[in-house]
Length: 321
Image (cartoon, rainbow, N blue to C red; front, side):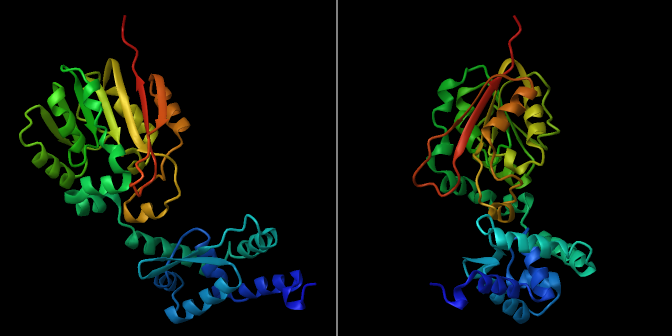
């Protein structure tokens, strides 16, 4: 038999108590969309950190938020309510009261600024890690990303576009096997590292450019490669179409990227705009770009890798008879 303190009514009152403060309601609304630290929350609602910490302790005790540690820092987020219908109903009612609250609207503007200052976008990220990018990719994806089998599939007269070439590790692998490589990257730090890596390769042409403004004549490439670049682009379907335009009849597009995952921290730490992709979506983009014989398969995972799984997708432009 339940005691009074364990009854559903008592539990409901405890949940309500967690929301019985305007500041706690404002904090919970911010944590509904973002994972934030005490300092970030304090800046967003313009309240002392000690006060915010006290409110978070009450929200945590009443089950409204979850807490996780990243190094020495604690990050908070609204707890999942999928299996708590009473709390979900309470939250729907409570959050609706904030829609026209001027203080809440100011909170949203300030948290956007907090996040913009915190977020290391992909430009800054690649400037920071250019020298260590190859080893970082290996830590994340293991030997899967090395694609050591790729040169055996290349023709000696092939022209390859390495779109988002990074530090040139893929270009260095395939340069001895093909006629020419068009190496494109928007980041100057990455291209500098690639030029150093490929300083002895005379068949690599470097371009600093965005993949939506490719300095390559359309219809002149045999193989276009988008390796771990789509998740950094605002419109991956447009990038797929732009890469396809570079292909000559019979040419192939190869996409290697992450399968859908839940590593939301990648948005902030590495500037990812997408948390991987559904391979069905990738095939749709390839089909819309005019590619046929499309395939998308997961790559065999490396047990030592710490990052999400990868997939490879291919398609080709029909040859002219």
